[in-house]
Length: 315
Image (tube, rainbow, N blue to C red; front, side):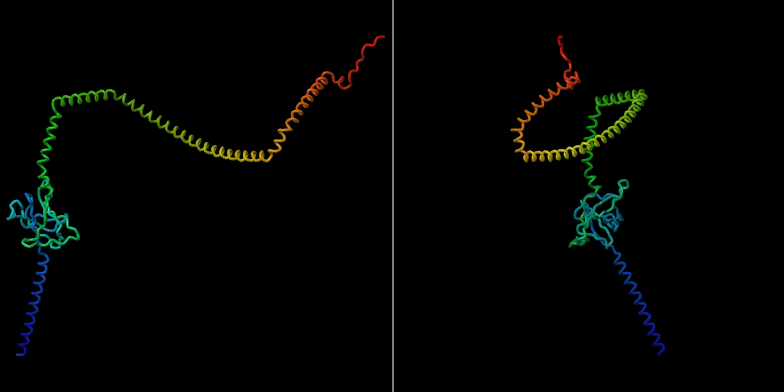
């Protein structure tokens, strides 16, 4: 009996362990499924959503975060299309995020949903009362804007075509043909005078070389002129120094005249008269010396010994 009771306890313990293990596995699987379950948002587009299909990509600032799960007309407003998207729950969809319909390529026409915006401080977008899912605001896509502006663009193209037609009328076409004919004639003349043009190019090259040589000479002359100006500056310095020395000399002379003014006054009053007399006597002396010199030159013996000739004595 005791052995059978032990088997029952061991079996019960094993069953409890197995049940706990299955419960842990189911709980972990549920957590993972809950973490992987996407978050759904509704986007309402005005107009056509051509090129957008179920399973199309959903991007947040260019990064894939999910896909389109449903495309339906809005039951309350048939002019709008309700697009339901399933995105990664970790994607930061903010209240200021905006969705737009863009195309992968104009050639393929495949469209996708682009969600942009979403500032860091903005709160997370939440579902409002009465909404099935949280609603992301939308804006016209680049493709829609292009389609909307297409009529105006076609109108402008029509105006341009009309103006081109006016420009290319019969008269203008004749003038264009005449211009082309003149260009053809000019080309022929240029082809004929190619040798002359070659000579002209050679002359131009020689003139360019001569001009280069002239520029070198001019540069040398400019250097000499700069040296001359430098020498002139040095001369100005020397002249300035000489003028300063002359000014000092004039100052000293003026001071000397101021100190000797009484003597100069006496000299001009009495000394000049004596000087005149001295000059007069000197003139007389010079005249006498001149006569003596003339006599000495004429007859030196007579000047020294006197006149020794005797006169006639009658007998």
